[in-house]
Length: 339
Image 1 (cartoon, rainbow, N blue to C red):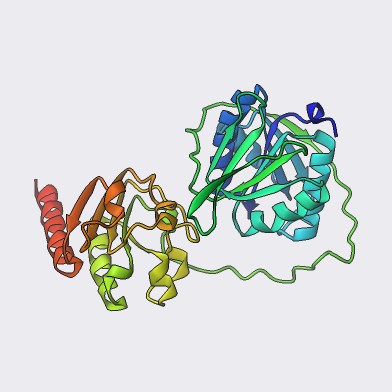
Image 2 (cartoon, rainbow, N blue to C red):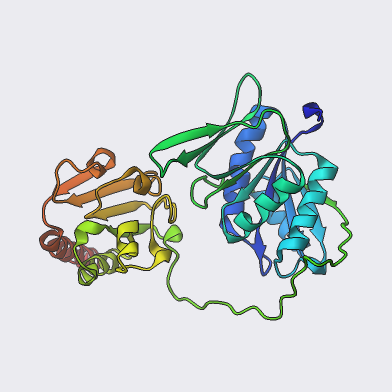
């Protein structure tokens, strides 16, 4: 393998129902940084059916070039057609780096593609950077239960591939009137024994806001004490116009649902305000929220690690503090409306 033949930073664009998933924009934003350090371009790989209308949006968020495979075999998502198409793109264009979102689709697709093109894959990365000397990709991820961070290299194979969890990277502000070169690539899809026929798609209906989109989060940990006390968190969140989230301990105990879990095994969030209630601050949880703009910690234990990352800390019983906090917020909101 001649490593010099492989050039460019490519991003797999996840789209569902012709709507691009947010993590794809985040990865394109990070790809621009990596591409600048590598002195190369950012290419978005857009797979789907009737997806050409999405190209301008990808250009606005930083793609220099778009490789588009538009075929009815790619709608809806199915493992074999997507793995086949992505492998064909890599074999033709020879990218140096390929990034995927660590979503259900990305985690299904990336390892299959890496096996087919005979390269490595670093999963759930929290940091990506270019080695200034070798121009290789340094991929950092939590290891040993989050107790240490491992930086992984792929020096002898290409492309260098990684999945990145949603919320870890930041998308750029859209660039008005940006355009990208679009290369339409035809792939031959011949159904084989690995093809799965999708007979029906049943969508989950939810009126809840995804915690990754929330600007304010009131989060509960083991120190909340019992599931009934989550009502105190909900009251404060409602007063602030925010959402409730949780640590893994509460999910494991059955106090909260998995889809509101923050942390290494949950979701990564970047709200404007994160209020940590009864959360000790283990590294696994911090990995999911330490990039929040402002962090307020409420905990009985004055030595809890959460206070090391908090902008403001309150030592005390949250069952006494939260009702007062909520009442003061309501008073302030009322005064603002009347003022």
